[in-house]
Length: 347
Image (cartoon, rainbow, N blue to C red; front, side, top):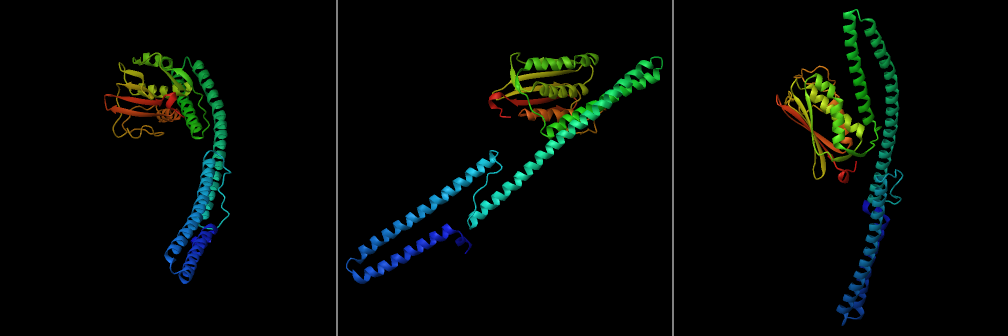
């Protein structure tokens, strides 16, 4: 029997068997020499043997309990970050085979974690190299393009194409920056520098960022919320997320439309809503809008690259928040952001 390969279980069975044999031997002896008081003596003998068996079993289970407590402590130590924590498994038996498998699993997970850390470091370094290599030629192309525009003042066709070239360069630069930002999040290379920020001031900064575009397109950006509301967040990254939501709203509205930014503190979250009265989202697209590079077949907007909303979602989730979209086709869209307040946010 495999169960008897364990030394402690084998000792327990041997002890119980010995007690049973001793009980039988003593009982037979009592029957042969003290027949008148045999019943009482056998009862006393049974009680003594039962006490011995209970003592042995109690000792065994106490030892097993200590063994499980030690194993649980090692597992907790491993979860806490000690990758060298292992359960002692120097004995034979099914339980120790289980401990051995747990140790093997811990070793495999440790190896995977080490490889993942190396991969993230490599990816982070690669991203830095790519960023450096791309910024230089893009900056040079922008300078050259500016020179062409100045020199082509008397050549309308050349000047027109130079302006179009500048727009395309801006798109390439925006695409590269968005890709680098998302890649940094994927690599775990982003560290959130969170501080208490005034939400009203943050939203005013977003409004100021798009004020020129809004005026040019004859659109309004309206703010609504308590001026004293604060939020523990990384200012620059949260501004990036809200900027992307407002840009998306402006891309899908027409002259005379408006974009509303509202914020409201609820019991456990701060809720920020970016709402527009533009074209809305087609029902077919609503489940895909946060996917990278997703392009709706119904969209007439040709400038987007499909990274603004995914990046906004990534940033908000890095703050321990969520984002949802509520839209009616032809009526407008509302993006609702919920970020846990400081006392409820462990991120």
